[in-house]
Image (cartoon, rainbow, N blue to C red; front, side, top):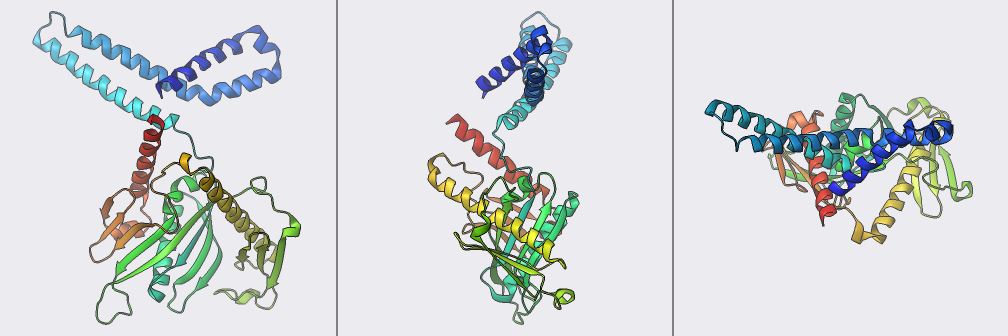
Length: 356
């Protein structure tokens, strides 16, 4: 890591000189390219320089203790050393985080898919609880949530719900939710008070641009039908729901939430692109599994990632062995502490791999 940072700092100094030289000023296109490169590494170079200055100050201040000093002066120097050591540790952590390779999809909007698993109607109610938790969390961060497709069960839960979260950095926060979520609680319909275990599966797909996946028009079958979802009565007289099938892969995307057939088609295409991109990512990961990052477990949809235990007011994330209480608060969308812990663990795993 320190070699990389030294190289970045050297490059920053080179760019400073080139931008100030007559040659650099004369070529407008080159000037723009150099300015952009400088801008990209300026913050990191400044933080590294601050770290080196702190390191030097720490060495000089420690050396002062070897001189002839009275007790009061020694205490003052020790206090200054403690402050410099604290600053050095903070800068080191910030540099470690900054040097980590960024996930190229972190800033993207997402499409989330929640499906009821084992547990019958209770699993559907749990899926609805997860949807509300994620929706509330998104709203606390100022992000927009739009339902694309929903399939309700008789109890008012979801067999499946597909929705979009639009906001800068949505994938960077929600990506840790991928996997099987398990709930342990007494269902409302359980007269004997027995605790049931149910599951729901969560998929988080980064929004794909048209350039991210190549979809040929001849590979698509588009079906138009009457909406049958709850709240779809206003469109039942006119066929507006859209189902798009990607023939080479068999991947299907449906949207029936909008009154407009065009809007439904646009949303269904967004889901299709995201699912195709997800498939491409999985194939690439399998092909280069030896180079694959841990990223807090495998994030596979078959992996049990978290348990919500209502009788004990406890939520446990199995990937990092973290247990937290005050489950109602978390289910109300206050998820930052949980997600921060997962992000910290991911960074630690990434740094460990880099050192190896």
